[in-house]
Length: 178
Image (tube, rainbow, N blue to C red):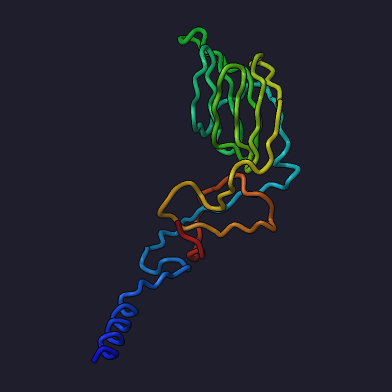
């Protein structure tokens, strides 16, 4: 009887086991759109440039360090704006940083991600910021878009580093979902 109870207990435990499926969910409807990774080569990813001011197109995070405002351009870099006169802010410069989504500033230093690297800029002269340090592989790489409940093309490291995601129409449901 004791063996029978142990067998019954073991069978009931296995019957309640959760089956984890690593594939895409079959019950989530596909709306005909997905996110596709935007790739850059290693040399393209590491190319950091200070450019003249440009218009914002897809702003992300904003950091205020009186009197300056640092505005992330999703996946592309950082705008530096002089806000000494809030009624007339002046866009000073743009730091081109492929794969940039996060920023922070303190004192005369600006910190920015560059795909998996962390960059430190001397911003004592915000018109002409200087790259002071690069800390390689300081940031874990995520090979999926930041938005959730979406289908996306699976990232392929052989194509380069993922520096962004673009939403596109697609006729067939891709293999990845988040």
